[in-house]
Amino acid sequence: MSGARSLGSSHRGVTAFLVQRITSLYLALFTVYVVFWLASKPASDFAGWSAYFESGLVRMAWGLFFASLLAHAWVGLRSIYMDYLKAMWLRFTISTLTAFGLMAVALWCAQILIRGAA
Amino acid sequence: MQQRTKRPVYLNLFLIRLPIGGVVSILHRITGALLVVLTVFFLWALQASLASPARFGEIQSLLSAGLGRMVVLLALWILIQHLYSGVRHLLIDVDIGVERTSARRSAGLTLVASVATVLLLSTVV
Image (tube, rainbow over all chains, first blue to last red):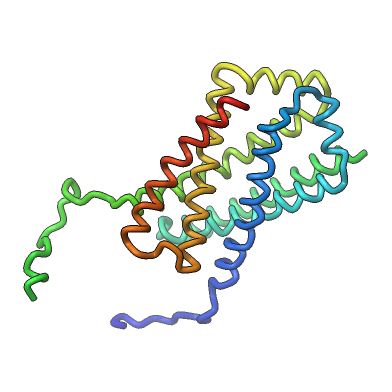
């Protein structure tokens, strides 16, 4: 340990690690379900497609998928930034813009799923 | 000590090749970053497809032929490669396939399986 520095909390990063792994399980299962569903029964008309998204359970499942996706994306992008953006001002700026971007996407997802409810 | 003398004394980037585990690892990052961008396109298409029968038809014809279909298949490969290498990382997290030969084999398997899956899906989607 030459060049010792403050390491901060020894638990730092554990939450991000767990969020990444736990969301990945839901994302993987849901992706397999959607791919199989689209492959087995292609939505060939608007009526069937919009009827599918009328279901509250479907909208909830998609909402959880998008929430997991955005949390997963945040942790993944954060890892990339920590590895490649060495200048702190750059890492901070890009991280802040990413956070706002992902929050905007979250609101957009909510708008798409809720408007379908009417 | 015998081992140490055989180590390279300089690092020639043209002689160092990334092992297949490293290739799959960096692919996981690249596909992950691309999936963030693709999410925006996916949401745009989803919103349009739910807006009206006319918009649904536009999106359907855009994605089912020509360049649109190529983009869909490429996006599917990016998604499935990330999924398979992600499953591989999760298995390694729980100590499955950590040993070098099996790690190399599983890395190669994700590449072969992702291409095979997309080819299979291209026949039904």
